[in-house]
Length: 451
Picture 1 (tube, helix red, strand yellow):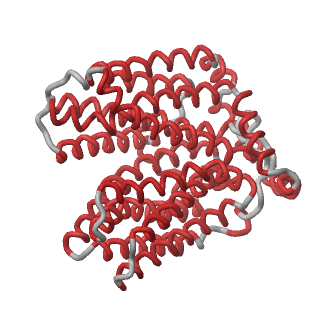
Picture 2: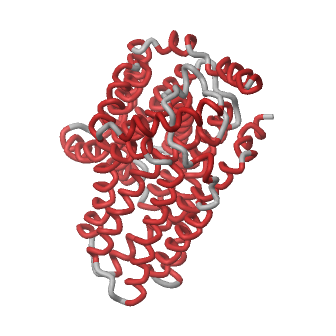
Picture 3: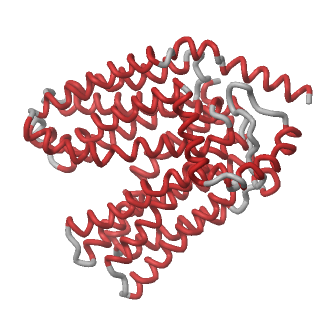
């Protein structure tokens, strides 16, 4: 049954521990997004101070995400994830203590935001790399879909809502204490991850095209993988990850498409959508927030549906068509004058974007060699993050030169066209037929049974 397909990863103990900790942690991150804003305001800060604190977190994330990918390939991911959560706990607990004592200053928040950004840079490549070690290949799609369902619900909706209630009823410092409690619980839960199986370094076996190695081979190759990493430098590891990406057409062209799509789409959504709400729909900040919530609900629905199904045989085609076709409704956002039609466009964009992201995350874990997975995941993260502020910086000046409807039209049309170009340039239809992941699962099951 489709519903049971989405729940299959929960049959594995290590996954239950990991996803429980992740749920608590991202709920705390959602609380922090609101608690931090009102803590800045409580200290007398305005838009400039708030921007500086938020920017500190972005700088920490962008500056260290490539290092985080390399660390995920060198250091046991279990230890890395626990260390990051411990650092998050220490930072938020310190801020909470300073706030409760009345000693908190704005620079404390900026430093804390920076450290949290660095932590995220190390956490997510390690999380992506650890999933194939605790789940069989056929359950990775459901696991990625579960995360994609959970994140908008907890981080974009429930966490901020609870923090808003706590701030209104008590104070921003109490909300920060709630965030610290979340990180404490996540840290405790993560320590229940099994040590023996997960602390061994990765071997160099391919994760996708050649299937998983048998357990005996994995353990036998662990020492060799550790020796190889010990003898290579940071920049050697970085070059190795970049070189693999350039040599792999489906990977390279998907990242190139992502670069352009982030550049064309994020700025209009984040910067220009409030003016669409004000000038075309006659709404205010509440309507803008509701549209973002609709987009988040679409993302959760798309992730849950994808997690409930098997990985499609034409997985690259489905991924690119979901992303490309899902951008088309945004082309009309600049001329629509009905709230419900704009909301429908945002829902479709959120849902189709999540379908593509769940498949994409699964492909990284299935087709990228295991010893490169952390680095390739961090390159993916870096590409998206690096152009996001550029897109937002260009949106305002572009709106001063071109009408907003033309900017949304360009964004909604360019992304589907480039998706088609990427599919043709990377020969994705032929590639996905040459690497049938459904057949690979059967081969892996046969190999495991024989061993």
